[in-house]
Length: 384
View (cartoon, rainbow, N blue to C red):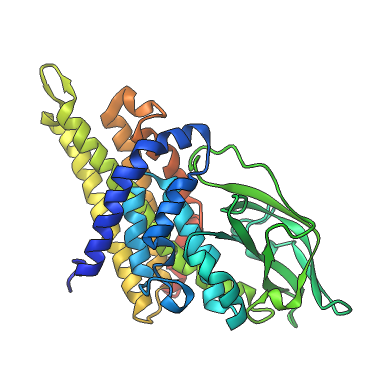
C-alpha cells in the first residue's frame, strides 16, 4: 500500500500550499481580527478551481474527486481554518447535496456558479433546539397545492456561508409530514437567497473561525416552488447522513492541516527563539513536545487518507470517517495546546498563527458531529 500522492495530487498540494503561504498568510490575521470575510481569497480560490475539485467538468468542475478536495483543505488549514472551512462548507454542504441528489434542472441551474466559486451555497440543518438530535427538527414545510409551492416556517442556527454577498441558496432540512411509524418525514428544499420571508441574522461573535461567515436563519412563510424539493420527499434524513459522512472526512483533513500548521510554526519558532544563550529547540523538553505533535499529525493524516480511499472505492466508510474525524480533531486540539506552550506568551497573542490555531481547534471537536457522536458511530460500526 502506497500513501504517496501521485503527480497530479502532488502538484495540487504544492499549488495550494504556495497560495496559502504567499496569498493567505500576509492578510488573514487582519481579516480574523476585524471579523471580515476574505472575498479576495475566495475569488482567487475560485480561479484556481478549488470549489470545483470533486465535480465533473460538465458542471464546471475540475473532474477530480473528494480526496483532491481533502488535500486542498489540509494545505489551507496549515495557514488558516476560516478560509479552509469556507471551502469545505461551500463544497461538501453547499454544492455536494445538489450534485448528489438534485435533478438535471437543479444541477444545471446551480452547480456552474457554485463550482466556479462565483457563488456560495449553504446547508440549513442545525436548529437552536436541535444539534446532534436531527429528529428534533422543528422547521416545517407544507405543500400548498393551490399554488404548487412549499411554505416554510422555522429557524436554523450556526449556518456557514449563509450570509455572504455571494451566497445564492440555502438547502433547508424541514419536516414535510409524518411517517407511518409516527416519526417526522424529513425533506430538503432549496431556498434561494433573497426569497421573501427568508431572513439572515447578523453574524455571530465567535471564539474562532473569525474570518468565516456564520449566521442564524429565520423562515417566515417562505414560499418556493414545489420543484425546489431536493431529491425524493421523505429522504432528507438519509441524504443528510450521506453528506455528513463525507463531510467528516473533509473535516478530518482540515483538522490535520491545523495540527500540521502547529508543527510548522513550532519548529520555526524553536529554531529562532533563544533562551539562556541557545535556541529553545536545543532543549529536549521542547523537542519532545514537537515530536509528539508531529506524531499526531502524521497518524491523523493516514486516518483520513484511509477513509477517503474506502469512500472512493465504494466501500462502507462510515466507521472509518468517524475514526478519522475523531482522531484528527483530537490531534488538532492537542497540537494547538502544545504549540501555544512552545511559543509561551507570544502564543497567547491573537495576532500569532498559533493563537488563531488554539481558538479554531475546539470547534473541530463539535462541528459535523461531536466527538461523542463519532464514538457512537464507531461503536455501532463494531456491532455494539
